[in-house]
Image 1 (cartoon, rainbow, N blue to C red):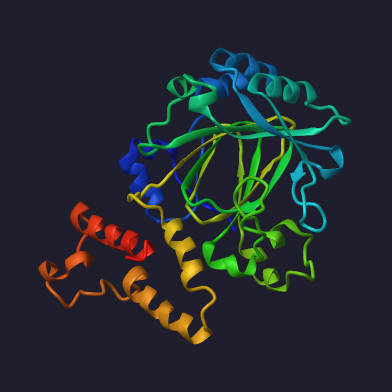
Image 2: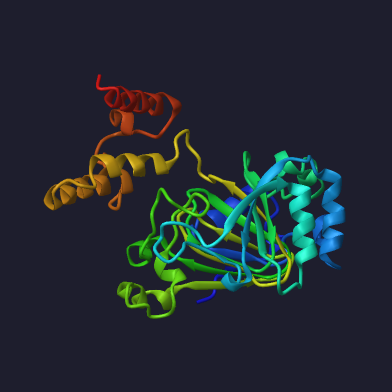
Length: 335
């Protein structure tokens, strides 16, 4: 399957992005979105040109770098029994890491290096001023990812993600949240970089350990991105990211396009504690109440009452939001 594509010229501000791209909650490719960025133009000739351009912003901070030996072919992953990883982590300055990555481009005997999720505000202050993207929402966190060929296993984020290819090529393979129960999730508290991954999507085709994945493998959405292209990945969509060029740079933005004060992931974690191990029949009962009050498949749970009589279930204005939040905190404290 291929994703929908939206022309970049149709996205002129945050409002148009929310309406055209974010609200459908479905992946979308935006061709040429950042092709006119100064960094994209400067990086086009060679990795050395990219290094020269970003040197002006380098704040000299230390970052964690993934280093894998050539046999792993850039697939940073677990070891065989999931007790460790197939790569090493080293801390070095951003500039030193970039120098080593650039020096290793095209070398067949050196390690594969990957530098990911680096805050542009902290590590390269001023970068986002020269390479602005006005369609992203307020409070978006801009980060840079760079290195040799790499394969980042399918994982999900709890924030909206706009990923922009600066140089190199990227292949994104995406799975809908509805397929989660057939992706065979790895540990949630022992991960490569914070988020659990799909063990099935990372395995060889038709691996007998993951029989239910065979049903959904061909439902993946695959997007091939060139320099200047971008892809919007809605929160909770699983995505595998392959950097397929000898040198690759990507800038992404994370933010909650429909933010309230508390993240939905907090509710998920709390539900794991309070509901997940109750008897099956009781879980089904709670599922019915969640569907009624939270997911609202049949509309507002108090649609039969005038809005003035819906109390805290009225529109989430600050007053009733604070009342509900305060009650939750009281209950957690045992009051």
